[in-house]
Image 1: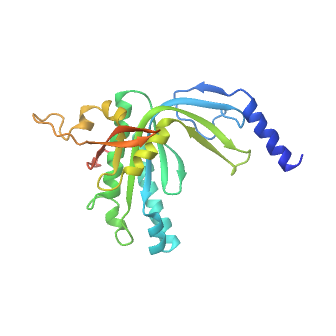
Image 2: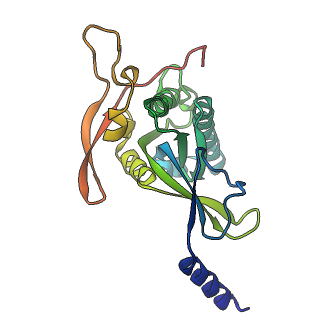
Image 3: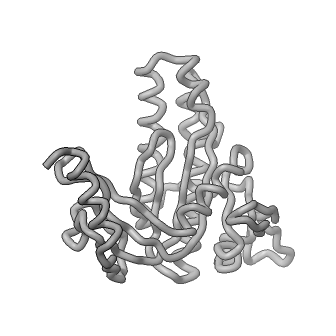
Length: 245
């Protein structure tokens, strides 16, 4: 079959055949046997943490490619180690960004994602204890984190073969976390949706949740999403890593 006919035949099958969605209680992986290149998808609920580096083009202008690679390796290593320590599932590295899913629907799971973000901020930006003190001889890095929660559909895209396939993540939580991240940069490096904020535990809202006078760590703002102005919240606080982490 000619390439043109092969593509048109496959596209027609994708568009005409019924899409089968299976609800799951985990974050899918590329080797999940429930996912095929046919019309199958896995739906789950999770808090989505999206992180994106700022100024990567300037890095390429200032440094050679091996130095830029080192900076990115340090950046992603930090994100993955902290996310994994909180039960997060890191997916979809794309240039300077990464998606992290924290599966679950409880206040605890949403708060865990935000706490992980605050610890990522600490390690990426703290001038004394974070990795920016090590990167300073090259370039300090800036970044933004966006967080939202919702139902996500995961599908397998591409064609068969080791290097021609990936997972595609569909849902407002993914898109909104990206929009929130676009607003974020140091020192206000973390933006969360109003839904996430309203479901945080007190220790993630207040600087000292046991104090007589509580100091809210978050400020209110807005984003434009899906044709409407929506509330969101941002913070310049972080959460330090200690010897128990």
